[in-house]
Length: 375
Image (tube, rainbow, N blue to C red; front, top):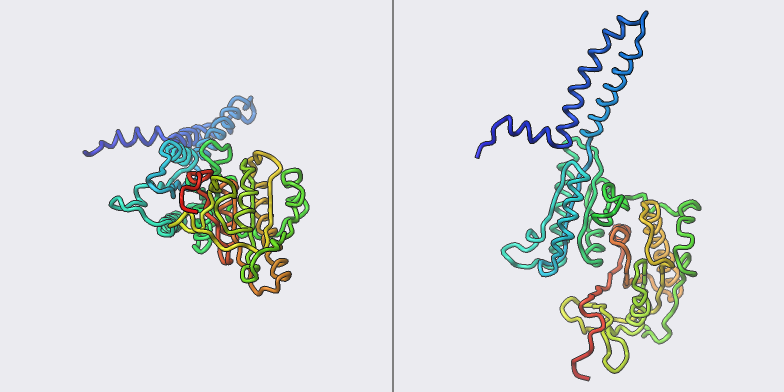
């Protein structure tokens, strides 16, 4: 059905950009129309005309503010279709459209063509290509607004998409913490090369009081019973969210390779080394490093989140180097146990994109489930 021109005009004028255009057109004419009167009143009182001119000029500026480029919002759900959080996805989509002039919405159904579920690697690769293509198109149009990602994903998926995005050519991308975040429009963290810059005194001071003792400069703690063939493996354990039990669980899994705790029912830790078999043990590690938050909730600040991402990268590199020297290993493999806000998870994925590091998957649906198999 063809829409009449006056209907299209009315729909445009009701938008933010349309209102800005109307203000600029109207009050530019008013401001310019006042100029001859101001000149005529040079020897008389010109305050009234000057006030009208200033007001018109301010409204023109307001029109420009309404029409200025507000960037690109990218909303993506990497969750399988069986785990789709529809209401949260809709809130993120609404936040993107509210905060940005244009948007890319990657709905869950796009990751399940013909009802067939794509693998995790396929979902990550497909989403990364879509984002790169849309951002390239956005740049080629001459737009210079910020690009902000609104991800709905599990932590391991966020880590992998961060590693994948690091290999694409694109400008720095902001990552929103959530649709209700007060800084969601520009993202609470910016993925970019600046995250590799070492922390100076001012940025390091942002972490004061936020990390437990020892997390500022963590050192590898050995597991003495680790087999010689696995001593080069390092467990990097990070807890920056309210999940206090994950430290001991991760430490146990890293030390033994077993995904279940000891005890009568052998409750599951939730950690899984293999996507196909949640009971399959993994190789143990020779040592572990722990970085833990001292507060339950981190303040939502871009400076703080970026400082934390850089600190994790520096702490991990230092620990890897130190453990490699201690065991005489040419290379150190890292098993990552990570519980942190999604923007920091993605940033750590970007920073370690070219390094040998793997994140151990954590499944909440398995956590604390009793053992029902054979002995």
